[in-house]
Length: 176
Image (tube, rainbow, N blue to C red; front, top):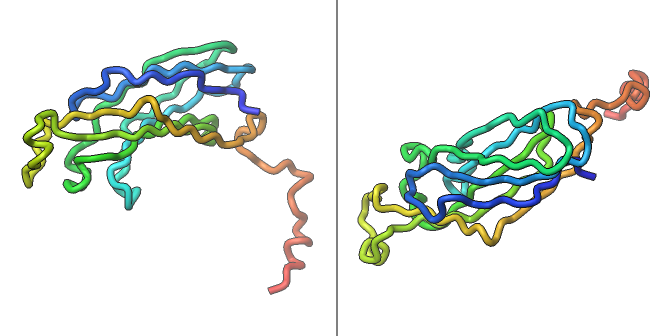
């Protein structure tokens, strides 16, 4: 069972200019005391075919976390345009919100993001070079994809207890 559950994520300032910051109001519930802080990451997927263009827009530590319902606004600057493939600046991409406890991801919320020109003429006849100042970002906030991962909340390093580790003799008996 997860000790932290996301109750709601509200996308703020949407739609907005491509260069404006991303802003999410995150509401989550903590069901038991946590010894350590939560890490939240915001990741912009720069190209569908390769993660090399993904940008971590921000990573923040939130804590100490009281038991009960908690809320905060997570904002981050827009992606660095010079690090994105020009052919992928327009159309659909993804922004991810990820939450980790002791470096173990336990939930990820993904949103499709549609980047397009504000002007109808530019949408129908896009110029060869993208005009960043005329781009609008629209996060499809009504259709998030939530993925949950099981982690061991009581064993922060996910270490195997001493009695469960294989003995040295067991390791030597492996057939080569």
